[in-house]
Image (cartoon, rainbow, N blue to C red; front, side, top):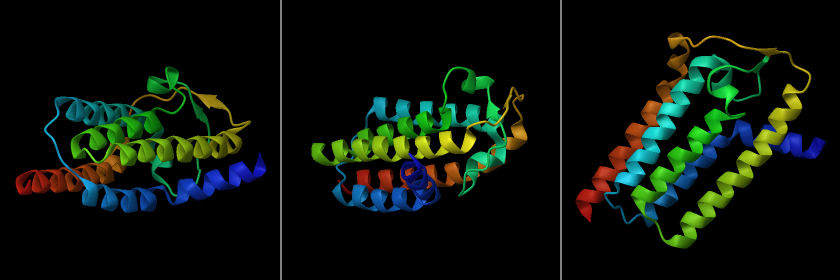
Amino acid sequence: MKNLASAGRFLFRYRAAAATVAFVFLVLAARPVNSPAGHIFVLLGVVLRAWAAGYIGPAGRKREFQGEYVIKSGPYRLLRHPLYVGNFLLVLGVLVLFNPPFWLRALYLALFIVIYAVIICGETRYMKGKPAREPGYELSNLRGEFSTWIVLAVIYGAYFVLRALV
């Protein structure tokens, strides 16, 4: 379990770099389609992330596990890892919109699930024994989501350019 926790810390630290590499390959293999379902998944992912970020604050945007307590309010009352579920919905929506070959979609979804399962194991070990709290939602916590909006702008920019070229 300790090795899995170490792997989780490593993957947590480099999750953005891995996503960037994956996105480059996705763009190269893209056959973009205009799918309402893809846009809906992206929207649901963004909304869930914004809801969760309002409770977790800056600790959720670091490169290391840094939570001081287990959150038990907002979406954390319903889901143990709402930011990760939001990420999954975003990835699913982007895969639908960019429409890569089936094998690449399946590979990306499988990798996402494995990577985040390992991250969750590491994070769970880190949070073990931490006290639980029920913080309120704070709009100021959304400052950390600015990078999510930049990533979405890049994704949709690439999507619309590819759509224009096809």
